[in-house]
Image 1: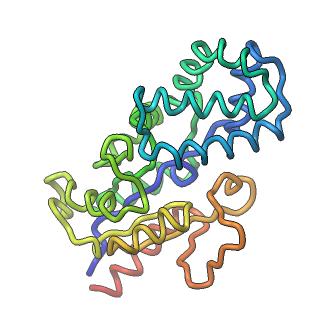
Image 2: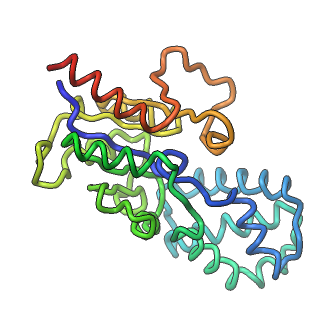
Length: 258
């Protein structure tokens, strides 16, 4: 079957933090908590994020994403050495600032190859969509980065109630394509390919849903934020070193298929 749909992960695939997340946290914390050790802050954020993801999948909780991220922010600051009472008294100011920052291009930027590849896939009459384990603010980010028009549907775990690697979120993308263009309407997962930076959630999740998959591993500093697993074995995994690899892969696959 020819490929008619390419779905993308968001973070570390199409876009990346404008500055490392722990740096942006440090800048926001400083007026309230003083200067925190960068290495401690970096490690604390990773631990806090993983804890809350495990405790509250798909942003569950009384206050939704706002409350979810408030907990991550609190644990990050305390874990980096800030005084608990000071953190708790400052949350009402720090949380909105960080939520706003990571709702726009102030917090994120596109990779240089993202927009050219989205445009080229459109010229090839390939539909493009986004599947991300994140909250609804990602739509604001995509709009601010001026790529919303290239991604339809945009499936965010907070909004659909499931997250990668659940096969349902991938199959939903195949069912929700816009009713125009050569790839209109429902298509088979076998006619889609997903690209992302997480071996388990993106690559194996897409395969489990019946889609093709590509794992992105950018060389050098651009790939530092990717979700790499310790000791990961990529010998049987289809890996690309940038988004142009998707265009080349689709062209080769469709040429062979048709």
